[in-house]
Amino acid sequence: MNTSVTYDLLIRGGTVIDGTKAPRFDADVGIKDGRIAAVGDLAGARAGRTIDAAGLIVAPGFIDSHTHDDQALIARPDMDFKVSQGVTTVIAGNCGISAAPLVRGMKLPMPLDLIDDPHFERHETFASWVQALEAKPAATNVAALVGHSTLRAAAMADLDRVATPEEIAKMQALLVEALDAGAIGLSTGTFYPPAVKASTEEIIEIGRPLSARQGLYVTHMRDESSKVMEALDETFRIGRALGIPVVVSHHKVQNKPNWGRSTETLPFIREAMQKQKVCLDCYPYTAGSTMIRTDRGMLDGRVLIASSEPHPECAGRELGEIAQSWGVEESEAARRMQPGTAIYFLMDEKDVQRILAFDDTMIGSDGIPVGEKPHPRLWGTFPRVLGHYSREVGLFPLETAVWKMTGLTAANFGLAGQGTVALGKQADLVLFDAGTVKDAATYEEPTRPAEGIHTVIVNGGVAWEGGRSTGVRRGRVLRRTPSAAAAAGAAA
Ligand SMILES: [Zn+2]
Image (cartoon, rainbow, N blue to C red; front, side, top):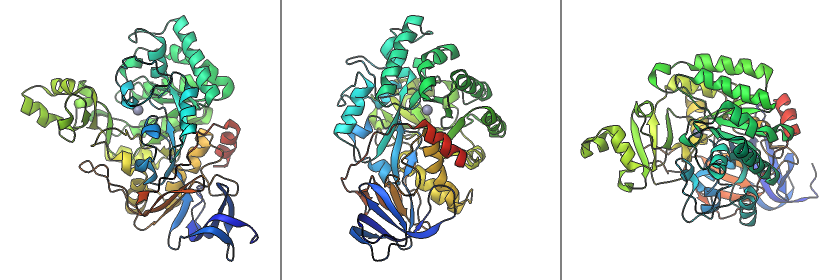
């Protein structure tokens, strides 16, 4: 080993899980100029700072494949709810909702307002949002999608119909601007009111510019309930029409009559994977969270209010109990609490486990960083997969768990510098205790930082240690490298 270099940072005596699913091995890791400069026995090497990792796992920083952190990166740049879990990169702009391009002064329909804030400057172009982040970096890296619902809000006066050819042309131009500025693809949320009327053809036409650039198509599908198979079919069709990779976001089968149907959806996804590039992600909970809705299907099970603009005092309370105290139907109580967010218990544990354990499933939090009582996935997703699902339930080995949040995700999203502990990669790393790592966030106390996460390093800078953010913010806006994605995908 080369002992003539002085490393900026030396992680000594740890056990490396490198993000490729390979078995763990003991090694020191040397960091220089924000990159991994050496992996091996570095005894005798000099360093500006040495971290003792004896007894700890040294893994690639986790990539959160599904977030709504577009605004939080600017408004809460320490990103404590993510770095505290070992997350060093977030994929933003999901479910059709992105922070740009937004028209200044325009009133945004739900759920586009989820990532809007009166204190947040609106960015009329994607480039403007990227510049804001590059001028004042957050603690984590970000790769971002542009949202189809956001494009609709910018291009259409009436969202309650299919877009006209003129509006489609306008959205295409906005998509091209975003892709040129660094967006990695297009997301849709046809489940949500602003895009529910968009046809398959509208999405394909808007998405044309993705083909030549090999941008991603990422979707919160039209239906994750009784018509989930039709929704998967539509998703695959869009991917084939454009010749681009598709990502099925937060895959689930919800509502009791559909419980168990992951036994249908997963083989269907596997079959599609033989013909086209398809991947999926999942969060490790049986409850979802989104805007407050009033439709019966969403109010089927237990509902917890997470935040409410007109009724902030209701955060953390059960919808049923609120409705009773107000003497109204649950749907009416929900309507009165809009706009806001809620937690919906609509899934079966067996489906969640089956989807998590599916070979190609990535881990994504889908956390919504607003309010005091968010879904615990915002603070707990990654340690919950490592501690609960890998160590306690035994769903898969720790090496597989780490791969599902690092190497697999980097390959699928085309993040060539991230996802593995290897020479020349960006020094995004997490040091954690395999025996104690676990989520501490609960539905009652959803903002408790995870346990067992010791040190988190982003681009060579220590962003989290001793149970707190250090204030070091070295996050970058990442671009997609499609060829690396193909190569890494083949290797994985
Ligand atoms: Zn979604």
